[in-house]
Image (cartoon, rainbow, N blue to C red):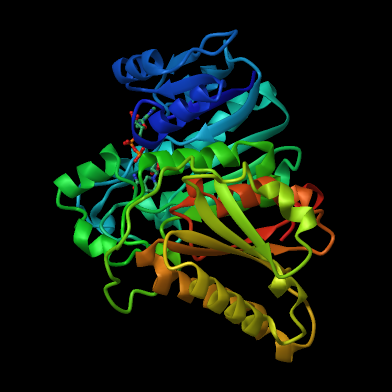
Amino acid sequence: MQTVLITGAASGIGRETARLFASAGWQCVLVDHNEPALQQVAHSLPAPASAPHVLRSIDLTDAGQIASLADGTPALDAIVNNAGISDASNIPIAEQSPQQMGRLLALNLAAPAAVVDACGAQLKPGARIVNVASGAGLHAIPWRGAYSPSKAGLIAQTLALAKAHPQWCVTVLCPGFVRTELVDALIHAGRLKPEGALAKIPLGRMAQPQEMAQALYFLASPGAAPLSGQALPVNGGSSVYGGSQALPPPSVGVQPLDLPLQLEICGGDAAPWAAVAQAPAEGAHYAARLDLSPLHAPAGGLLQAVHAAAVEFAARYPQQASLTLLLPSAQHGRWQSAGDGAAARMLIATLACEWGSRGLRINALEVAAAMAPQELHALLRYTCGSAAQFLTGQTLVCRSPAQAGSP
Ligand code: NAI
């Protein structure tokens, strides 16, 4: 049995994450300051086979209470630092006192580090630590107090933790808009206009909390090792869109997140990648293509290889499917070729924006030549599959655990 500690487990993303881990047989240590809601969540979870779930009702803005977290906490395979608050006060940041910002910074930025400090001795070798930041940590959101700064700080803190402790797999999830109580409260307070937000999301919708749970479940698994020291933006493509015009609304719905993956592999030797595909898909399935051809692109030809792969994919899949490309890791060659990789990555982002309303996704993994295909199987299973339906437009840099934390 594996054990995970999840903060902010009484509501929204944390509650769905606890449900997913518990239904997969994990023991959960559920942490929140809302004890009645925490009890309710705990009672709704399937019980683990041996030890029961553990409930810890604590205020994560209080360093003393966090320090007590280790008492009674079992050995941990993973920590998910999810608890966070936004600022719906509408008070301009220059008019806020340090005290007004203090609680948000304590929870969003100081608490994740304090939880790791408190539970470090409980973490098993090879444990995974996943922090939940936000797209707001990548782009400033005004009139939300210190929310964006707190999340930018958490992203940087995650990368530093990965470097300082290469024995753990440390990642940070940057969700886009997710329809939870937090977002409902912002809409209710007039701090978020849904129509304006949706028009800037290539996939044209907000995520379901279950989609973030799937991302966190993957990041808390050993298969996330190639992403250690990195951020995973799961935001419907909003972080790659420049916002020049309102994007069209979606013409398709969301498919179930647990559909079997029907994976077509092209552009190279499929054998080392065949294990990525799950059961042969009879009946309902999620269609995906893994194209290896950019890996073998001639010097100066990466953009053309990505474009050719996209043309073929779009001709074959009209809607609701994913294309994942393997790209060679950035080369340090002649300066004249230095733009090739960036151009290819921006082409991927542009395609994500143009395809999103049809539920067509595109992502890439940038892989070092020395990486063994098996190191990438679990990551590919996640990015190609239906669980990652809110992930598009991203190029993820993959490293072997030995390289984790290197710049
Ligand atoms: P939520 O408001 O639904 O849940 C947050 C949970 O944290 C609640 O159970 C709450 O009781 C708990 N919590 C709040 N203050 C606490 C404290 N002082 N001590 C202990 N527990 C405390 O929020 P949601 O939407 O599920 O967000 C979870 C995380 O995801 C947050 O870190 C948030 O910033 C982040 N996020 C959410 C997005 C969204 O669109 N919902 C987008 C991007 C990031």
